[in-house]
Picture 1 (tube, rainbow, N blue to C red):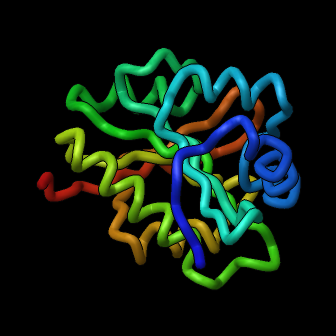
Picture 2 (cartoon, rainbow, N blue to C red; picture 1 turned 180 degrees about the vertical axis):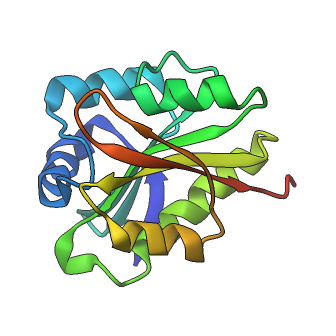
Length: 165
């Protein structure tokens, strides 16, 4: 049975394995970077089936001390509180089973519980990630703009407005 729960240090090895599988659609992580990102936000999630991590979601609130380039661009565009979804990845054998959707639902619920009414993220257009763009459109995300990143990617900046509980 799939359970969405907070990321713990015990999940590190499996999260890093999923990260490798998901590249170049997500930024590369190593143990040091994952530990750093974990120290900046306590709201990261994993999707777990028994002992196996099937997916993960890294996210930050607008006021977190995260230094990601796309996050900083969104901070300059949006004055209101938001949750920035930095990475969502699902292991290859578990894709197309609704795990990504469940992670997004958990992110929406957690944001709403904190009275935050928007989720933001970015999706690569160079290199292309049409599957992620289509998924975000189905989930109700709309385009805010696009940007070229320092590492040579082009990304589209997205947001989804939420109904706060």
